[in-house]
Image (cartoon, rainbow, N blue to C red; front, side):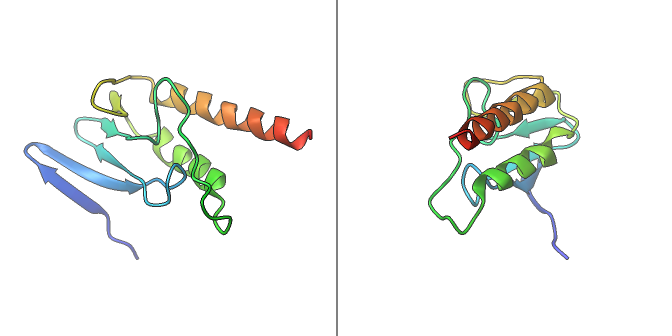
Length: 111
């Protein structure tokens, strides 16, 4: 059984969510009461995150897609991938990212 990790900063009670794929140890921070996701490079607004490929022992793309599924249905009023940008349609952006990777895999398999 694993215990959830939290970070308390002022009024923010941030749950640490392990979201591998971009990097193996990537985390997102989620504030449940305020419905805010600090996604880091896991869910970027305007570009597709780089998927780690240092080790072929790990299926980073599979881990990334599973991590997207994990955060997709979090109640979220705002998502913050970095300090300069925020957005409100987390589900829509995740759907775009998943479609992008599905198309890339289809194109790759044609070769």
